[in-house]
Image (tube, rainbow, N blue to C red; front, side, top):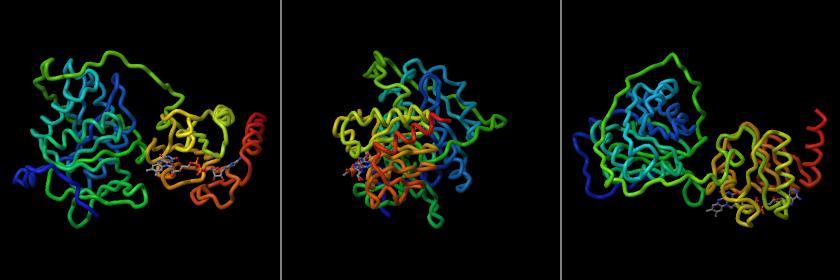
Length: 345
Ligand code: FAD
């Protein structure tokens, strides 16, 4: 166990002891909440109950009050809402200023953000401004029974060990958590909570970047985090054309195509398809690993899948240690046979 580094300058204050409340940054785009935020509300509920504290969602945007209902339904007691025309789209300056102001005013004890592009940008900046530490890219959360501190778990040393990290003397304790580590809670639309509107003083000059355009490089075809069925291919495909077979199996199953880093590094599939420690963390109902050996860095991104099916010609491949169903054989024979069988149904 190690202590999260905090920037120098802050000291434990009486206010730290008074810090209370578990907060979740609710990431939204166009009024739609990202799944990871709801996953964190579900897990934040457990932390808040264990600590005997309140659970709040922080919603920042422009004309986004409607999504508070979804946050309450997922388990929050309270929603802090900041609406401003300059906060319509995520931007580093505006969101950092708004979130920092809220933290300084209300002094939560725990802040959770998704380990997404926005969460990874916002979390460390807010942590630095309020002089606390942040544990990035967590894959597990809990409360240490003795110290009552949040125990943040994350892979360390290239994924070879799991480290448990504490932030003992600064508040809030902050961390980013990977998508799909926790299950999204079942919404209970009978729940409601307190909606607290907060204002933030922001001028055009405070926001140094402007979003001109959004260019969609990949649509649902590589939305791996939300996919229920994923068919992934690895170096065992031998050639980039092998992904045609992977796509055929994905199409037959209504699934999405993933890839190992070896396949991505070889240029056979673009990076948004990569599953693993330096790619996406996925948790589908079914994950097919085809021609993938099962290196620890790949497993780090998919081992929470409900059912894992491995196809590999090497019976000793490590992937078989985590697979629920293993097929030892040449994928160029096995996959066409599966597709043919699926087409019979
Ligand atoms: P290989 O390990 O080469 O495995 C190919 C497999 O295909 C073998 O098991 C072989 O038996 C099988 N095979 C060959 N031909 C056939 C056939 N015809 N039919 C059936 N099976 C066949 N990797 C990731 O995937 N994601 C990551 O995010 C990631 N991040 C990393 C981060 C770091 C810091 C490091 C150091 C590494 C990372 N890696 C990651 C790389 C990882 O260590 C492995 O190198 C990589 O996962 C191997 O990819 P692979 O399984 O496709 O290839």
